[in-house]
Length: 114
Image 1 (cartoon, one colour):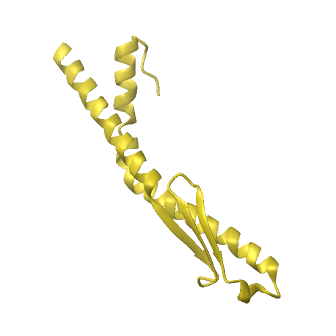
Image 2 (cartoon, one colour):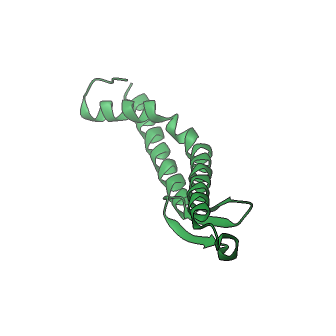
């Protein structure tokens, strides 16, 4: 029994380390969201920090409200891209959450709940 608990704890620790690596990789990732056929683009980090915004000013000289709308759309596009990357990179680690809860319960002596 002790050997099984030890193995479970080692497996949970490996999963936590893998999750941390995946989160670090995601934070370093940059994506570019765009709108208006590329008239507006936003570069964003995996941590949802906007790194740069490009607006084709000539295209919006007569309609700055349109530029504002397209900036919002480009930001949303970038956020959605980060979310998709996050789901694909971190999804397998999130499915391991029950093992982490069990490890915590064994270490603390608490009852495992859902």
